[in-house]
Image (cartoon, rainbow, N blue to C red; front, side):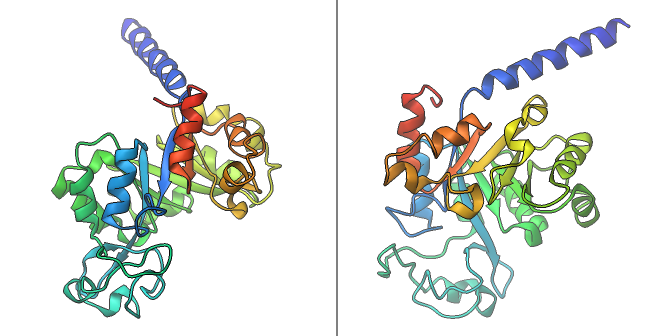
Length: 287
């Protein structure tokens, strides 16, 4: 009985700590600081980390010789001066292409590897959000273990717990994980509760084209467990129009960033990290 009471006290203390910690909002830089460096470049991630963001988001892909590289698209056509898929090239060959900046100009930056990125941010107060990583969990896990950065990486996927368990049964208890849930789809809340009953997710990335879901009206059943609510302020299809450009270009934070915070966001992924940090600090919602 005494042991049970002590355990309960510790559990309550942990929940209280999480609730206090979640008074702050984490800032996630989508593809790094891509307005001042090529997207998904090592420089973009270094810039974002120096800026003070909490997480940088990047996208995984794989070369012909099995190297995990950072590339959002299925081809390198848009973001480099090369053509074709990463899988068409060895890493040595794909490294010869230059990344393009926002104006389309070829720069001196090159496609980085996941290992490059993790070594660059190792020990810094910033995490990495591994988007498009679901096919590469084993390879990514190996790189994180090799570089000693496993605690700085968030794995993610838009799958049910049962699907995750079937595909990666030996990994799910060894990684920091975040489910992606589309709130517009039937059964979205059940997907969330299934995860909460079976593991301890870092957060739930909630996407929605309509802002009518009951989960947005009250998501304390998520945050009371210590998990965070991750909302995207990128483009309208992910947030029903409560987006970055409404805040920055129109000066309307009431219907954008304020709205996301009012609806439970404790992580916000943004294309405007500098402005988002300034906004949150003005509200004492970021260090």
